[in-house]
Length: 456
Ligand SMILES: Cc1ncc(COP(=O)(O)O)c(C=O)c1O
Image (spheres, rainbow, N blue to C red):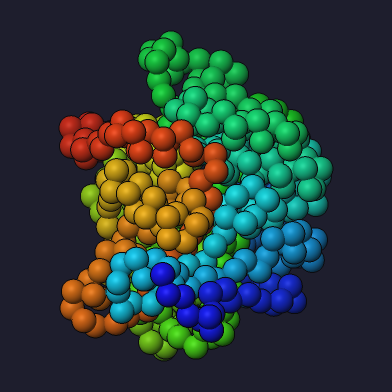
């Protein structure tokens, strides 16, 4: 194959260009966010309601409307271990597709735990430590979030307890071992270590778990252990905020490349890597700049944004979290055990839902076989093995590039390659040997779960 020698493939920044502040989209939103409600009273919650779960510094970030929220120096210093992350031009994928489109991807898989998740794990661990917390409890789907928090716990000296969704615990033993190597304690959820886990197992002994159940267990663990707070890897406003380092760096890197994206794409489970990439770009639009097509991609097996209802719901199955307005499939909905464990969630971040509801972003859903096919095509052209979650974004990026070819209209596509798939090889093996199944959108299960929505 003829390869041009002068083409630039990587756009890299200096460590000094790691952002000094997170970008808070609340400062620029064209519509105000909906209030978070107390599950008991139905009234808007205040800081005191969240204090049992989170340190005050994080609660302050949720209510802040400052555009720039300074990144504490110890967090920025830990970011130096892997930030700035590179932006790649996917020349070889473009060639394989024979497309006139230019494709760029931001690679977050080079972090110590292999995804974008340490961007918020380090921040959360830092603020908890600073306020005297000694132990954090959390849930993990794919194991990426648990690994990131375990790593952050090691950096800032905190004990970490992880409730890992049973389906992933069985599919990904090496993720558990990585977390344990960082010093965390990991149990499969539903587990026997909480009252809620025991109840679920008594009713359904073969339960494969869900993020909704694991969140309930982590919250119960938090409120029943002194010195413990709760930490989460997605959905909440402050998690999305911490991820905006991704988009801010990308704006500088696209300047280096001398191009502007027409389409910006991210996979969306709870919405944090998608928001991290896209919010800084959307902020430019909201401040009067040009518009971009922004697309969130989710699995057909858990399509909250494309088929869910925009309403108040709980973030977890046991109804312990505050009520947030979001696109939801119902907090009782347990998605099929697809391999993109990080996308197996019944809801979506309220900020992402708000933007979808008001037409500022688009959403698409993709079956798991199609997304793995795109992941394999990407690996064979670009060399990086993607985690199952971002293969959803790759699938839509390829679609957009093929559309450019069919229409003869070039475009610039930017997507987030938010994690590597080195711990997901058994899923790739199942795909390659033809054993991977697609799960149809489960209409009846979702209808049943929606019937259990809280009345607000
Ligand atoms: C690699 C990867 N991508 C995406 C996600 C989905 O989460 P979010 O939508 O918050 O980025 C996860 C969650 O575990 C993940 O591990």
